Length: 154
Image 1 (tube, rainbow, N blue to C red):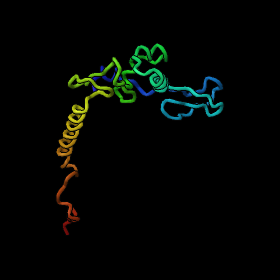
Image 2 (cartoon, rainbow, N blue to C red):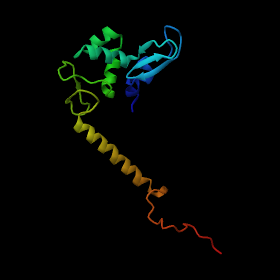
Image 3 (tube, rainbow, N blue to C red):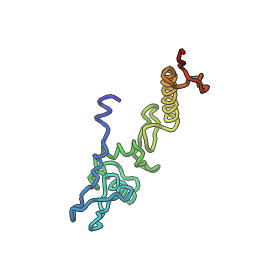
Image 4 (cartoon, one colour):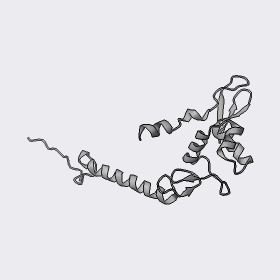
């Protein structure tokens, strides 16, 4: 992965996960789908994914700029969640994503189904080639009939 790709990727901490309760200072426990609850006062808070998801559920077809304006979640984070497959563009939306290989319109992820299959086939083939190169290091040895490979001279 190139340096520019690494710079563009978000780390898990960039989703602004609440760790400390803003009400009482207690520890926030993950409850699922971006929701966190304080173990002491039971206050509920959301990470960026939870905020975006809640807004999208009540405002179907919202654009990334509308989501950013209403929730404070950056458009870059929203695009990253779409590419991860955590969010999905609705069928009636004006917004769309493009396959990184062929440019076809997609609703989530990085690739269309056809390019996804080809991408994984390519990775599998690379792994097969790597395994062939590694055969001399104990992988794929045919003479494993249970005999010792080295015998002592007596």
